[in-house]
Amino acid sequence: MDNRAGEMDVFVQAATLRSFSAAGRKLRLSPSAVSKLVTRLEERLGTRLLVRTTRSLQLTPEGEIYLEKARAILADIQEAERIVASGGATIPRGPLRVSASVAFGVQCLVPIMPDFLQRYPEIELDISLTDSVIDIVGERADVAIRSGALRDSSLKARKLLESRRVIVAAPSYAERRGLPKAPDELDDHNCLTFNFRPTAEGWPFRDPTSGVHFVRTVQGNLQANNGPTVRSLCVAGMGLARIGQFHAQPDIDAGRLVPVLEDFNPEDIEHVHAVYAGHEHLAARIRAFIDFLVNRIG
Image (cartoon, rainbow, N blue to C red; front, top):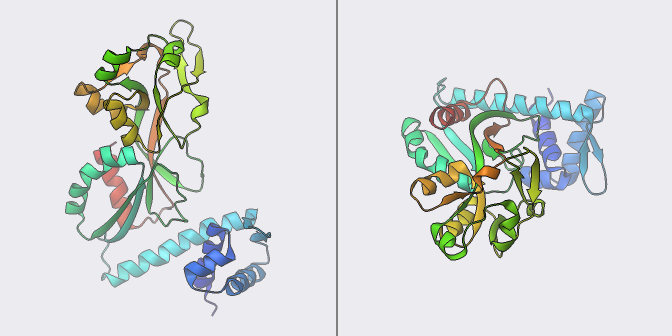
């Protein structure tokens, strides 16, 4: 009988990495061996799954369908082996790789992880904090915490929280520079921005009289790639910042930051989700983690 699970794994790696060479390095196979296995799979199925180009591999519509099903089947096999190896128990255990934004990780995730690991001591937690959007499957992350719109329809998601964004400044900055009373006064202020977002688009506002939304270009002498850095610099009085309220609220409550231009706040809501490449038979460790987040954060 053919090793169909092995062929599926080879195909999933090649399709995810968009390269026979990259898949070969991960699986310790030669690029030609990977290519031959994918070709044999296509011949058996009687359809093309990948379109080969000189630079990369592209999935066909049939390849997209097969990739989704193959991932689910391989996850089932992995879970079945884990359950059998543990004597049939379904206790959450094993490695769990989690990716989250730096702000969410520092503010919301890390503080509750001791409780999670006390409840599930057989889970081995691996947390990576980055404000870059990762490829969940390619990076082999079990769960990613993401803000904003969900672009990959093949992924599952559960909402953790909603948070408006606020413009804030430190009292020390207000004493030194004053605070803007309208968006057009931002030209006279130092605005702290992110270097991973299209900051050229500026900050959104709403006219409190007409209700019309508009965007104001902002400028400053400092950019950063994560929320905690921007928040810390804002607390230090370096300038104005626009960050998630869940991130700024402890400093607002403590008087370290004050809201600015609230009359013009467009009330744009940022949705934060736990995203995972799963299906109805989700691994116990992943389900336990997501349920824990929903109960503690949601």
